[in-house]
Structure formats: C-alpha cells, structure tokens
Image (tube, rainbow, N blue to C red; front, top):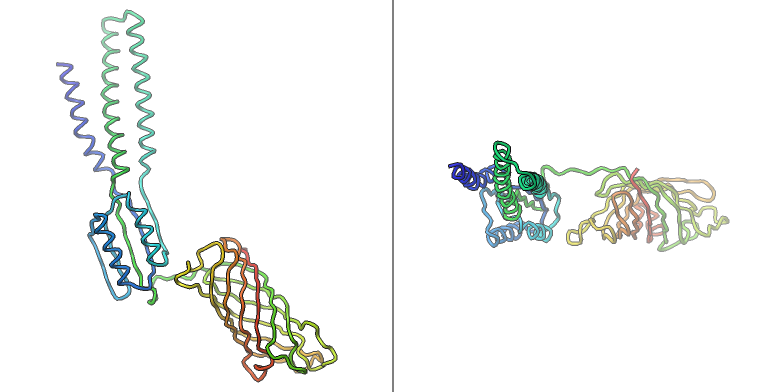
Length: 346
C-alpha cells in the first residue's frame, strides 16, 4: 500500500506540474516602432511575414499615416522580425522583456544536486552500519521522499526548457508614415559645445572690398541631436593688404544652423561617415582696415557634409557650404566655405 501511495504521488506531480508551470509563465513582450517612407508597402511586408511565420494576429489599427498591430510569434522568429523592421525604415524603438528561464533552471539543478547528495549520505549510513528498526525505516522514507522531489523537479526543468524555446512572444508593432508629423515626436536636447575652423574662398575678390580668402575660428554650440546649433566667431583676411584701407579685413560671424540626414543612409546612426545636408542663416559684421563703415550683413549658407566620427560623447564633423551674403556685396563676398568642427558632451 505504501509503495502504491508513493507511485500515485509521483503520477499526480507528473500530470499537474506541467499545467501549473504553463499557467504561471506568461509570454514575453516586444515593442517595435518604425518610421517608413512607403506605409502601404511596409504594412504588406509585415502582414506577409506574420503569415509565413505562423503568427497569430489579434488586433490591428490602420489609418492614413499609421499602422498598429499586435500579434503572437515564436521566440525563434524574433531575430528575423528585427531584420525586417531595420529594412523597413528608421527604427525608433525596439524593446524586449522576458523571464530569465536559465536562472530558474540553474536553481532547480542545484536543488537536485543537494537532494542527491543527501540520498548518498543516507544510503551510506544504511550500508555501513546495521541500522534497523525505526531508524532504518526513517532513512528509507527520506530517500523515497527525496526521489519523489527529484522526479518533480526534473519535470519542472524539462517544462522550463521547453518554454524557453517554444514560448510565444507578444509583439506590439507600430509603423508610422514618415511624411506625417507624429503626435508623440520629441526633440532630443543635448549640451555639446565645441570649436569650429572655417576657411572662406571668395569667388570674385575685388580691390577695396574683399580679400581672396578668409580663415578663422568660431564657437559652435550644438543643442539638439537633430542637429541644431549656433556658431559665433571671427574670420580674418589672409594676406591682408593694409594699404587698401577700405578692404574688409575681418568678419564677425553669427549663425543658426540645422543639418538633416538622408532617409536611406542610416539617418546618422553610424559611428563613422554619416552623410548630411544643412543650412545656416544669420549674418556677419564686416570691419575694414580703416575701421570705418562696420555694418551687419545677413547671409545664408547651404551645405553638404560628412560626420567623420560620431559617438554618444564626441562629434568630429566637416562640411562644405556656399557662402551667400544677402545684400549688395553679394557678388564680391560670396564664395566656398569649408568648416571642420569638434564637439563634446558637457
């Protein structure tokens, strides 16, 4: 009868434990948000992917500028899903939360090792000494109980290993049309001061007005990762002819600028060689050799650049602009402007 009772306990554990574990283990969660240039095409790609991977869709929401869906998919397909989202466009969110199954398995295996060691001690006591009567029955009962516990823990481990490989993941996937302005968009502000070198080659230098070239340095303060910035500094004439008293020998420049990354070249996420275009608007105060007629002249620059090095803490950048004064000096002061800058997080 005693053996039959122990056998029934083991059978009950084998039947009940899998269901108990399945009820307690909830599916992991993944949230992805991506901005795309072709909303319908991206929506179709995602729908085809879910079907091909035997995913289960239980919510969708499609509007003119946004597609949202929730679905279940096997853990083994998550890497393919990440690859698809990166091909679609610009991924702004990719968060994955899951339980640490391996840690649970390791703890259960340690407990099994402890129980096996206890049984080896009890068995040695029974073997090495003539333990009989009540004490012998007690040791045998402890060995039997430990064996039952070990069997249930091994079932538990098998179920956790199966869950780790086959558990379905709940995915919340949002596709935004990049041509629209999202309601939840945020500007990422930074505090990145730096210094910038500039070399201005005048297109049509004219005696009494402009030198052949100017060079100098400015303080460049970048305040968004966008990137938006201010710069303030001085360019001085190279080979200044002091005998030409009306020649503009110094430019005190002040500008606001913004740069924009191309959609199909990483959007500035690479650590090296990020392409971009941009503009600067502002002006400069011109000083002449005779220190007369200092005036403020508005200007606008259109630029093309390459970020040489970009990390979370530093930015090494260079670009070429067309320097364009917006007044009567346009013909005699416009030219090609080269700028190289170094900024750092402060």
